[in-house]
Every structure is written in structure tokens, then in C-alpha cells.
Image (cartoon, rainbow over all chains, first blue to last red; front, side, top):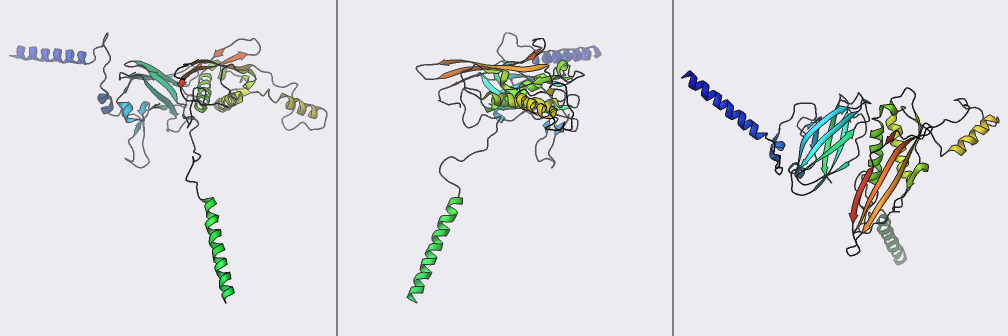
Length: 161
Length: 214
């Protein structure tokens, strides 16, 4: 009997791992599919965020993240990756890879806000950069800070052109 | 009595007219287009296929952020001396534009961002500088509060740029397309080397509307 239990447990574990693998299985040689609702439903990372001076006056804006300014955009674009690196000059280089989940070309714009540990802006917000997203494909947005070591957080804002 | 009544009526009528006419000038016009405050970094009310307000801000921002990430340029022990003006910014494109608008925006953004890490030199005002130096040296003017130097500041770098374009027009539909490219480079004024070339600022726009740039 204990052997049966062990076998069942092993089988369950194997099945779970197989299912888990299947869910992140690469989709090589296939057309991209997105579940933007999953991205929309994602919880906050729990990191630093901008909050209104009156509690619950607005939804907190997660820092070190991409903030979409348009509801329709959240159904079309997914942020695949977001990275921040220090350059040789100690400025911050942000890289975001965007995915167009639609069948049509998209034109979006992004800009970056850089702030210190106290969330005070270290410099003027960057100019809007236009990003062209081919259908079902990726594009990269990059921005550099002007400030150096004092830059502790950033926020990328995304809007429809 | 009749005469004074007439006067009263006349005075009342005049006052009414003055009141009616007076405030009409202060009243906002309801017809026509009102002037609107617009974001200089936005698309604006009129947009065509050429370089526009938002592009000037965007290209200045791009150059500043690229240069501020160059340690060999901004982190040297002695701040480099640079000139940013329109003397070496060439407009070979089909668009008419005041080149100073681009170089002035660039110099202002760069100077503010550098915060002393780069020294900006003026060559546009050389005649005025030489005139003032002459006045000081001939005793017409005193030496000022900063003292005198043997010569004016020499340059380490000059920011040069070029704006070019490629136009296409569909004769049947009247649709016009233009690729505009703006490139900035830093030239070493001693050796002629180009230690930095910026990411070309490229726009490709098409429109059927006839927007005039001037």
C-alpha cells in the first residue's frame, strides 16, 4: 500500500511537472499567442510604488515597471522583459522588450521617469520615443538616465501614438 | 419739463448704448478658432511630414542622454570644452528650418544636464569678445572681476550635425512621403577624430495634406 501511495505521488509530481513545462513551452515555428488578461490580472510586485497623498485616491503606480496609459493598449501589448543596467558612466540604461499581440502593426510611444530613493525626480522626464511594433512580433525600447548614482528607481510610461 | 424729460431719455439711451458696446469687446469671441496651449513635445494641432516641434525636443533629449553616458567625455578630470552652435549644423534636407532652433535646444539641454562636467564655449560672439578684450587692454574698461587671460578658450570638441531628406510623391494620389535623417557627431578640434557619433534620428512620414513649413 505505501508503494502504491508513493507511485501515485510520483505520478502526480511527474504530471504536474509536465503540465508546468507545457505551460512555458516555447512556441518555436508557431505564431505568437498572448493572454493579455493574465498580464492585466497580475498582482503588484510589492516593490516601491507611487501612491497618492490621500490613501486610495488612485491606484498605486509600481516603480521599476512599465505603466500603460491606455486601457486598449493593455489588450494589445505585453511587456516580455524589462531590464535596468548601470552604464560605464554610472547612468541607468533601461531596456524593455514589447510584444505586439495583435495581427496589425502598432505604433506606441514610451518615455522614462528617473527618480532617487525618495522618489524625487532626478531629471526631466525623457522625450516620448516612438516604437513601431510589427504584427505578432517584438520591439525594443531603450532609454538612458542623465543622473548617475542617485537614480534609484524608474518608471516607463507607454501610450498609443 | 418736456425738455428735461427729453434730456433724461437721451442720457439713458446713451448710457445704455455705452454699456451695450463696452463689454462686447471684453466678451470672448464665440466664432473662429481660439488660441490653444499645446505640449511642445506632442503632435500639435498641425502635423506634416517634416521635422516638427516634438522632433526637436526628442532629438535634443536623445543626444543629451547618449553623451551623458560616455565616461570618456563627461567623467574626465578636466571638463572638456565644446562648442554647440549652428555654424557646423548643415541642412541639406528639403525642409526649410531655422537651424538655430535645433542647436539652441541641444546646447541648452546639454549644458543643463552636464552641470559643469562640460565647459561650453561661444564662437558666435567672438567679435564681441574681442572687442571687450581690446577695451580692457587699452584701459578704456577695467579688467572686470574675473581677471584676464592670454587668449580666449580653445576648443576640444565641436558638435557637428547634418539634416538630410529623401522625398517621394505619388502623382496620382498626391500622397507625399519623406524620410528625414538628423545625425550628430563630436569632432576633436585638434586631431579631427570623431570620438562619438549619435544614433541617427530618423523619421519617415507620409501625408496627403499640404502642410507648409516656414
